[in-house]
Image (cartoon, rainbow, N blue to C red; front, side):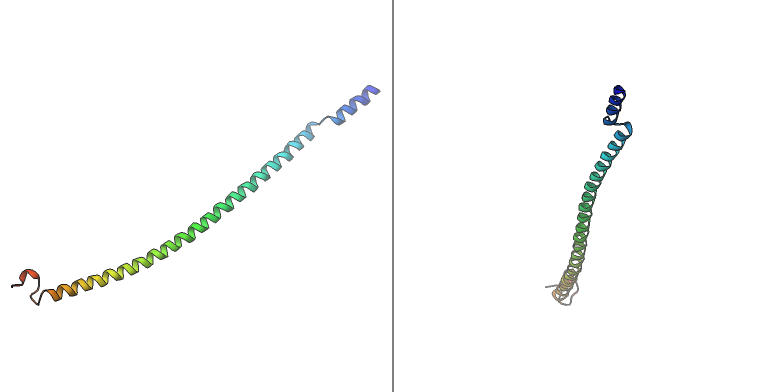
Length: 101
């Protein structure tokens, strides 16, 4: 009888295979949750970077479009100035090659 009680006591204190599986599943669940939190933080950081870059690129595009407009206007102005100087410089003879002195 004492042997049976001793055997029951040992069996009760020893881990059963089911309790070991449950323990492993619980630790795995905790590990997966931790990894998920880390991945979520990394994703949020990446998403914020993408948003910041998109805003910066949009600003660069708008700035570049403004430069194109102002430079186009400057080119047109300088072209008109050059043409008016060329017209004034020919003395009514057409091109400088046809002018006689």
